[in-house]
Image (cartoon, rainbow, N blue to C red):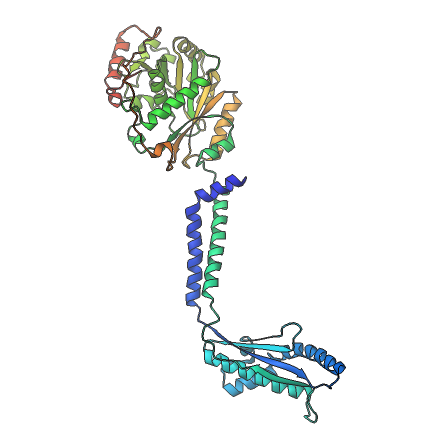
Length: 492
């Protein structure tokens, strides 16, 4: 991952990072509030050496006192010094307990001893510090001159008496809160990185681009109205969904650099990614531009085209391939003027894979390619069955639909691409659905634009007219009576 990936991770997980950071601050604040305040009193002892008057004696005495100070620091927390303090002050502590509250240090290259005592009672801490200093001085004199028959080699004196501290030395509120903030932020960032690395769900365009180099031909936002009305309406020419399907139509045309009829398999990795909706709306948009379009519902296991478009689904692809009816009798016209042709799935057969892989299916596809500009095949998902790979080997290309809202895992999309690669299918591009909306994007605002009125035109098909047999007339009538989604729609 590069710097942009880390920035994206932080941006996408900013709320989690903020919550963990606040939790760290809250824990630090709670621990600080539950900690009893401790007061620390400090005193200082000066160590001098009784030496001669010459410069040499003074220098030797200074060196001697510096060496002695180190020993006196260790002696300050010894039982010989602390036991008298416990007895004099009547402390309910052991020598080890009192030693834990005493700290003795000696600044480098000095003859000073700093003593500090900590206690929950500020007055008690001052008394203990002064008492330890007095006990240390007495103990040093006893150690240096055990018999007391001569002048002591060293002279210890208190240069600064311990006073009652006015503010607690711990807990340090500001420091604890800052540490809680830093630790919480670090844990939040670590959590975001770990979550991203372990999360295999596809949540944005970048996740798709890491898996495949195939072009992204279209992206559709997660509109709440799309579930209730999957078929777009062209009454509002500024509808974002309609405009995005126009862009998909344009991009798909650019993939047909050699010209001629395009037979496109529309599929997805797993069910529920919006392949049927994409195929139907794309067919509507292509018919709007004047192309001769037919949509085939080749999902013979869970067909959806008939229900989506409000058509009769009992007669269709399966009945054509099994030889029960002719092609002309199975085609249903859809739209105000029947500009879009549909072949529904027909009855669900017991052997869908055999039917779709049969020579009859190949001949049917070639026949339709000779009559239409675009043949859209709504195929089953790639992961559960092999039907779409069989169809992909017959068609001129595949349009792969994938959701980017965390519904699909990277392994599932990669598995679908691998299935297509195994039959050398040409992936024309990907269509992203359920793209999360962001402020400032095309989906986040509406605009108005006035233009000259355009008279509606009708794209008549030179090869699209068919005979009106009994079966054909009944299916056309039903198809045209169910156009509630496109009432008043104009095809241009």
